[in-house]
Amino acid sequence: MTPRAPTELGTASEAADFVRFCYRRRRVGWPELYDEMCSVASRGLFQGWGPMELAERGVGFNLEELPRLARLVWRILEEDVDRRPARVVSVRPAAAPTPDRPEQQPHLVAVAP
Image (cartoon, one colour):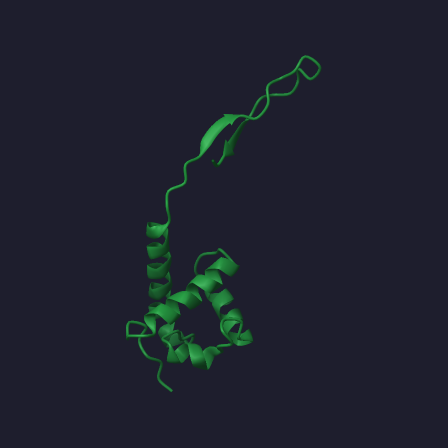
């Protein structure tokens, strides 16, 4: 069975959903994400799909398909970063030294609103 290219209608979204699912499970970069994708596929953890079902949707794991799969992963993760709203973080002192604990040094803590 020859896997279809993920750019075909109907497969790009399913391939992207699979990549996002795997990345949410384990936020790592390539090639560790590839290992996670293989693990998920071998157990059918994403919608019950194994390697054959994923290949039908444009996600292939064999050696010849690795460069295309890596490009797909990078494109999807870059798109997700571009869509993510910017987070505003404020920095404030965590604690000031007190008379009973003069050795306590103040340090900064990032607090998300």
